[in-house]
Amino acid sequence: MWRATLKHGITTAAGDAVVGQSARFMAVGFASTVVHYAIMAVLARVFGVPALWASQTGFVASGFLSYVLNRSFTFRVPSAHVVALPRYVLACAIGLSINGAALVVLQGLLHHVWMAQLGASGVVAVTSFLLQRHVVFTARKYVLF
Image 1 (cartoon, rainbow, N blue to C red):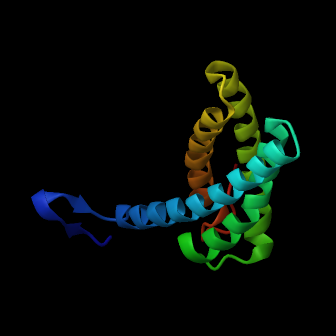
Image 2: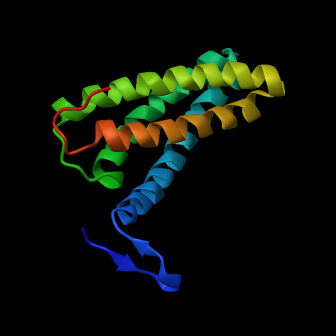
Protein backbone atom coordinates (compact mmCIF):
# COMPACT_ATOMS: atom_id res chain seq x y z
CA MET A 1 0.00 0.00 0.00
CA TRP A 2 1.26 3.46 -0.85
CA ARG A 3 2.23 5.59 2.15
CA ALA A 4 3.41 9.15 2.60
CA THR A 5 4.90 10.85 5.62
CA LEU A 6 3.65 14.36 6.26
CA LYS A 7 5.00 17.06 8.56
CA HIS A 8 5.32 15.99 12.17
CA GLY A 9 5.72 12.33 11.19
CA ILE A 10 2.05 11.69 10.37
CA THR A 11 1.80 8.74 7.98
CA THR A 12 -1.12 8.50 5.59
CA ALA A 13 -2.31 5.82 3.20
CA ALA A 14 -5.79 5.22 1.84
CA GLY A 15 -6.99 7.96 4.17
CA ASP A 16 -5.93 10.50 1.56
CA ALA A 17 -8.74 9.30 -0.70
CA VAL A 18 -11.23 9.66 2.13
CA VAL A 19 -10.13 13.26 2.77
CA GLY A 20 -10.55 14.19 -0.90
CA GLN A 21 -13.89 12.42 -1.15
CA SER A 22 -15.07 14.06 2.06
CA ALA A 23 -14.19 17.53 0.77
CA ARG A 24 -15.92 16.92 -2.57
CA PHE A 25 -18.91 15.37 -0.78
CA MET A 26 -19.24 18.49 1.38
CA ALA A 27 -19.18 20.74 -1.71
CA VAL A 28 -21.85 18.65 -3.42
CA GLY A 29 -23.77 18.49 -0.15
CA PHE A 30 -23.72 22.27 0.11
CA ALA A 31 -25.21 22.62 -3.39
CA SER A 32 -27.81 19.95 -2.67
CA THR A 33 -28.69 21.54 0.66
CA VAL A 34 -29.26 24.90 -1.02
CA VAL A 35 -31.72 23.22 -3.41
CA HIS A 36 -33.37 21.29 -0.54
CA TYR A 37 -33.80 24.36 1.68
CA ALA A 38 -34.94 26.61 -1.18
CA ILE A 39 -37.70 24.17 -2.12
CA MET A 40 -38.63 23.72 1.53
CA ALA A 41 -38.82 27.48 2.07
CA VAL A 42 -40.98 28.10 -0.98
CA LEU A 43 -43.35 25.26 -0.20
CA ALA A 44 -43.67 26.14 3.49
CA ARG A 45 -43.72 29.93 3.34
CA VAL A 46 -45.39 30.61 0.01
CA PHE A 47 -47.75 27.67 -0.30
CA GLY A 48 -48.30 26.85 3.38
CA VAL A 49 -47.18 23.21 3.07
CA PRO A 50 -46.43 21.70 6.52
CA ALA A 51 -42.71 21.69 7.38
CA LEU A 52 -42.28 17.92 7.28
CA TRP A 53 -43.80 17.59 3.78
CA ALA A 54 -41.94 20.64 2.50
CA SER A 55 -38.66 19.24 3.84
CA GLN A 56 -39.20 15.77 2.42
CA THR A 57 -40.08 17.21 -1.01
CA GLY A 58 -36.93 19.34 -1.00
CA PHE A 59 -34.89 16.32 0.07
CA VAL A 60 -36.15 14.19 -2.81
CA ALA A 61 -35.66 16.97 -5.38
CA SER A 62 -32.11 17.65 -4.22
CA GLY A 63 -31.35 13.94 -4.50
CA PHE A 64 -31.24 14.14 -8.29
CA LEU A 65 -28.50 16.76 -8.20
CA SER A 66 -26.65 14.84 -5.52
CA TYR A 67 -26.65 11.59 -7.53
CA VAL A 68 -25.23 13.18 -10.66
CA LEU A 69 -22.53 15.16 -8.85
CA ASN A 70 -21.51 12.47 -6.38
CA ARG A 71 -21.27 9.83 -9.09
CA SER A 72 -19.18 11.94 -11.46
CA PHE A 73 -17.30 14.30 -9.12
CA THR A 74 -17.10 13.00 -5.55
CA PHE A 75 -16.48 9.28 -5.88
CA ARG A 76 -15.50 9.07 -9.57
CA VAL A 77 -16.41 5.41 -9.79
CA PRO A 78 -17.59 4.38 -13.24
CA SER A 79 -20.36 2.21 -11.81
CA ALA A 80 -23.06 1.50 -14.34
CA HIS A 81 -26.33 3.28 -13.60
CA VAL A 82 -28.02 -0.10 -13.49
CA VAL A 83 -25.84 -0.94 -10.45
CA ALA A 84 -25.42 2.45 -8.75
CA LEU A 85 -28.90 3.92 -9.20
CA PRO A 86 -30.89 1.24 -7.32
CA ARG A 87 -28.34 1.40 -4.50
CA TYR A 88 -28.62 5.19 -4.48
CA VAL A 89 -32.41 5.07 -4.33
CA LEU A 90 -32.21 2.72 -1.33
CA ALA A 91 -29.62 4.97 0.36
CA CYS A 92 -31.89 7.97 -0.29
CA ALA A 93 -34.86 6.14 1.22
CA ILE A 94 -32.78 5.58 4.34
CA GLY A 95 -31.72 9.25 4.32
CA LEU A 96 -35.30 10.40 3.77
CA SER A 97 -36.46 8.34 6.75
CA ILE A 98 -33.67 9.72 8.93
CA ASN A 99 -34.40 13.27 7.76
CA GLY A 100 -38.10 12.98 8.60
CA ALA A 101 -37.58 11.32 11.97
CA ALA A 102 -34.81 13.73 13.01
CA LEU A 103 -36.86 16.74 11.90
CA VAL A 104 -39.87 15.68 13.95
CA VAL A 105 -37.81 14.85 17.05
CA LEU A 106 -35.60 17.95 16.87
CA GLN A 107 -38.51 20.28 16.13
CA GLY A 108 -40.21 18.94 19.25
CA LEU A 109 -37.07 19.59 21.29
CA LEU A 110 -35.97 22.90 19.77
CA HIS A 111 -39.36 24.37 18.80
CA HIS A 112 -37.75 25.89 15.71
CA VAL A 113 -38.18 24.23 12.32
CA TRP A 114 -35.03 25.61 10.66
CA MET A 115 -32.74 24.68 13.56
CA ALA A 116 -34.34 21.24 13.57
CA GLN A 117 -33.75 20.91 9.82
CA LEU A 118 -30.13 21.95 10.23
CA GLY A 119 -29.61 19.22 12.82
CA ALA A 120 -31.41 16.67 10.67
CA SER A 121 -29.22 17.61 7.71
CA GLY A 122 -26.09 16.95 9.74
CA VAL A 123 -27.22 13.47 10.70
CA VAL A 124 -28.22 12.70 7.11
CA ALA A 125 -24.91 14.00 5.74
CA VAL A 126 -22.81 11.60 7.80
CA THR A 127 -25.08 8.64 7.05
CA SER A 128 -25.22 9.50 3.35
CA PHE A 129 -21.44 9.79 3.02
CA LEU A 130 -20.91 6.38 4.58
CA LEU A 131 -23.62 4.71 2.48
CA GLN A 132 -22.51 6.33 -0.76
CA ARG A 133 -18.83 5.60 -0.19
CA HIS A 134 -19.22 2.00 0.94
CA VAL A 135 -22.40 0.84 -0.82
CA VAL A 136 -23.56 3.04 -3.68
CA PHE A 137 -20.42 4.14 -5.50
CA THR A 138 -18.12 1.28 -4.64
CA ALA A 139 -16.18 -0.67 -7.24
CA ARG A 140 -17.40 -3.91 -5.63
CA LYS A 141 -20.05 -5.66 -7.65
CA TYR A 142 -21.93 -7.15 -4.73
CA VAL A 143 -22.60 -5.40 -1.44
CA LEU A 144 -24.40 -6.81 1.56
CA PHE A 145 -26.62 -4.42 3.46
